[in-house]
Length: 159
Image 1 (tube, one colour):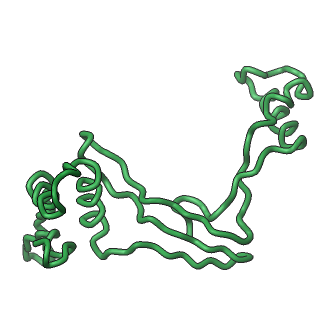
Image 2 (image 1 turned 45 degrees about the vertical axis):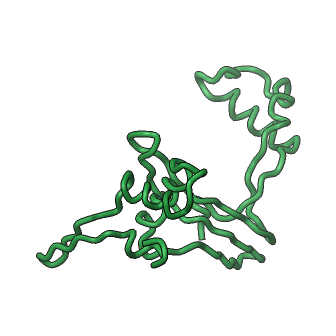
Image 3 (image 1 turned 180 degrees about the vertical axis):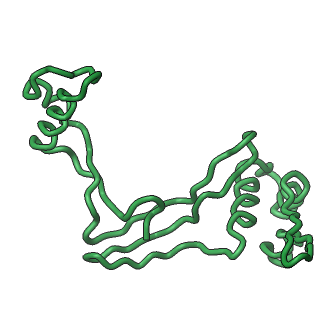
């Protein structure tokens, strides 16, 4: 399972061979700042570079993926958080799942980053429902249904 765009990996420092390889590639690229130079003189410039290598054994974590779209409070869900354990090509991935991904995470982001933290949970949720509603009209097989996703994602004590 990619986390989110790649398989679990770790980052290691370039060794001498990696530095020389990249220096050689860059000295052969037309338009590159080092084009035509001797790669051996540039090796030290790449000694602090890192490269990804596959993770053989270990844990990998990727947090919630999100962005803002039109304004600083217009949150968009991209991927769920995932904790992954890798063991020689096998992987166990634990993710926070909701059947309503966007309708779950986008209000949570609004709750976390926009609402007033000095208020109670109930007051913050009321603010979310007012300022970031999750009411959608869904069409399926010629029928329309209006859904308030807060009814589906919140515990009854917060409704």
